[in-house]
Structure formats: structure tokens, C-alpha cells
Length: 412
Image 1 (cartoon, one colour):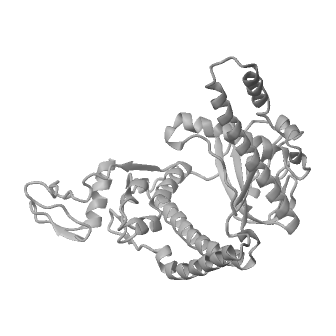
Image 2 (cartoon, rainbow, N blue to C red; image 1 turned 180 degrees about the horizontal axis):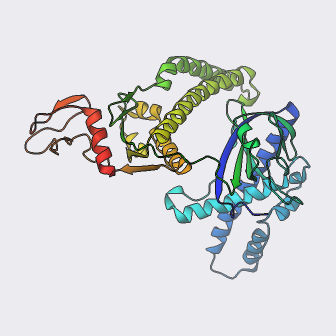
Image 3 (cartoon, one colour; image 1 turned 120 degrees about the horizontal axis):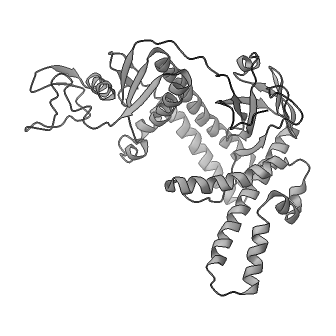
């Protein structure tokens, strides 16, 4: 049987689960244990670094270093902290927490901007990882590992048992080809919704390659509308956050008042029922905005990739753009970075081509004659200039459509 790394195609599947109260407690215990082990690894790493700076060959220091090095595995850590021997805790959750710590160091060494591993704080969101194991099976499928789908409506997980599930996994269950389940992540978000994310691998594609459409398109992302395409089509900006901002502000004011009252009465926020009810309401509003935006971006990116052989977009750095306080809310609301990431992985999935180009002068350049606004004594276009006429060839342009044509031309 091939391992996950040996399989040619990989795919991610996220489905929602509906655990019982007893199963929720098990998820919480595993999440707390996973977070504790990760934080312990961070603490050991910090102490080892400090001890390594001691230049004197003191026996006590050397003994402490050896003790800490021996504790950096799941078995020794479990022996050192007796509460980790709880039978509800998945042994693979412990191993994955340690592995995630080492992966964080690898990411730091590869991309220094990620930062060194830091302590994970306690929050209303829970998370831990386990793995699907195939002990004596000759072939790996979605229905014969330690993590398996019992039927379309139920999944079985280690320590948790049978869980009701809802998601888009039916088409994968109907496939006759071999599909291996790798890492499994169980999460709870701040809105008290539970999910299971599955890493899948197979030697056959999860999605069929599409036939050539013989079409190319350039897209200009902006805040006036969501995007303008080089073929003249415009997609309106749904502005999901702005439409619900008033309701959210009112709910947050109530939450703030309940927080102040609980602190004044010296009550713990986690034990304050009124505060927790309002916190959950605020979290659900945020989740509703996220879900609607995410669904819109998924549908839009899939439509673009399926109908075009080549999609060209600007390489936008949202982190830099958000420094503009006048536009920060609008930029965060449209989700440009998420949209570009979706286009990138879906292009690989469906056998299409997606590239990004530099946004320099795509708006200021006339597509017909190449004249750049801001040169030869002319002034640059501002955000208020939605239409303009080229001073050299006198062609009338709609700003976003002209930019989309320039983006497509840069992509060839």
C-alpha cells in the first residue's frame, strides 16, 4: 500500500459534524492536550536556547539540558505529566502536536517572515489532529481505515466513535478507485460549529481535466465592483460585511456592556451565561459574513477557471493595501487574497492556467496607444476618475475595463 507522499494526487475535504455532548467533551480534552503539548515544546525550546548560552560547563546545566531533550517525545511527556494518560486522549493527537512544532520551525527556516513557534493561547475555538491508519488492509479506501465513512450520513473517528456528518463527500464515496485518508483535523469555531477536515490522496485525479475553451480573460479587481473582465463583463461587489455592519455593531455594544457588568461583579466571563449567549450571537454574525463571502468567492473562481483557458490577474498584496485606512474596510470585505488563492489551486485542479502580473500602470496606461497618464505634463488618474479620455489618441476609456485589457496583454 502506498503512503500519502507516494500518491500522485492530493485533495482536501471539509465536512461538518454534529457531535453529542459526550463527544464534545472528548474533542475539548484532546484540543486542550494538543495545545498543552505544543506549548510545552515551545517552553522546552526556549529553555534549551537559554541554557545553551551558558558557557561554563556546569554539571547542573548539562543535566538539565539532557532532561529537556529526553522529554521532547510523546511517551516521555505523557510519563512526566500524568493527566496526559487520560484514556479519552488520542495518542496520535499528542504526536501530531509535537510534529506541528517541528513543522513550525521548518517553516520559519524556509520563510523567515513566519516567525518562530509561539505559545498557543486558550480560546473558544478548539482544534486537534489525528491520522487514519490502515493496519491490515491491502487497499486504502474511505471505508476501511481507522477513520472511515460508515455511510453518506455518518463518519467514525478514533475515540469519538460514530458522528453525524454533512458535506459534499457523496461523489467521493461513489468512486471505485482507491482513496487514502491521511491527516484528519477536528475543529470547533467560535460559533460552536464542529468540522472535520480530511487530507485525501489517490493515484487517479479527483476532478476530470476540462476540454479547451479557447478563451482568455484578464480581470481587474477593485472596490467599486468586485471585478471587471477584459470582455466587458462586470461583477457587482456584494459587500457582505457592510450590509450587516449595523447589526453587528449593536450586538457588540451589548456584549461590551455585559462584559463590563461581569467584571464589575467580579464574575468570570466563561461562567457568565448572559455574556456567553451574546458572545455566541456575535460569533454567529461573523460566521454568517464569512460563509456568504466564502461561498461567493468559490462560485466565482470556479466559473472563471472552468470557462477560460487562461486567467490573468494583478498580483495584489492585501497586507500592504490595508494600510490605507480610507479603503481598509472595503478591501478586507472583498477578500482579494482568498480569491487569488482559489484561482491558483483550481487552475491546477482543472488543468487551466492562472498567472498574476505586476499591477504597475495597468490603470494609468491607454490600451490603444500605450500612453501613460502622469507623463508629458498630464496628471495621474485618481480613484474618482471612473472614465477618462486618452490625451494622445483621444480614445474614451472606462477605467476598469481598460485596466483589465492591460492586465490580459501583460499575461501573454
